[in-house]
Length: 231
Image 1 (tube, rainbow, N blue to C red):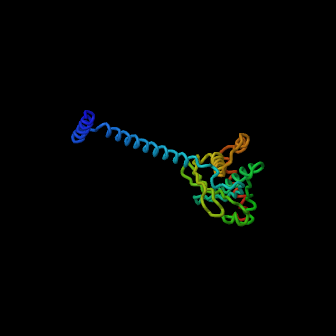
Image 2: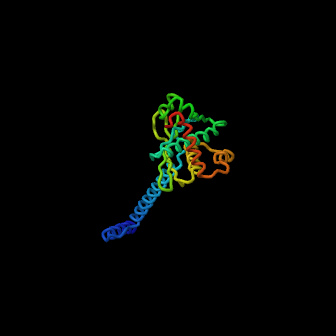
Image 3: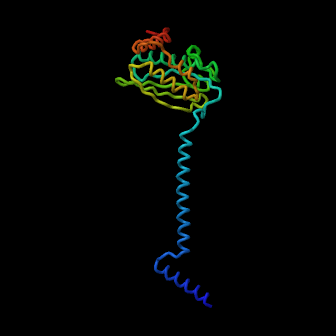
């Protein structure tokens, strides 16, 4: 009977505390469990969101790139109307093609020669696939300001026409060699190549060349590509 009375007194005390708005021991335990559950959910959501961000940021460099790359370097486009700059851009395209062709010896990589492209009048990614069998096309445009030039490079799937990669680089207008090196670097990165130290050295080897002289050199290469239609 005394135990029953004790239980009744505990219930009455709990009811009094509830009416007064004070938590009982049982309510405190429930509140604690709910609070811990909410904290765990928030932490899990934050960790999941961070993992998604890391996953997106660490997307493989070769995503969407076929295992055997057959690359066509399409002519870059000069956004100015200066004919000399147009020939410079064509010379740059040929120089980039030549640099990338040096990487084909020990890799599953084929780079279409510009002479084949000119002979077949290939100007688009679709034409590069239909006439030369290329599965990727690398191209872009040059935009000039007073003392800077921006190269916007694009990698295309020749079957779907989809843009797989887009990247821009800006260099000093008076540094054509730096521009060429950046475009080659972007192309290598876009098709997912890992270069050896020796290959990296070959990609940037130029010898003692004056920037101004190299600008004229690239223009001259562009002129030679168009010798049959120079006015």
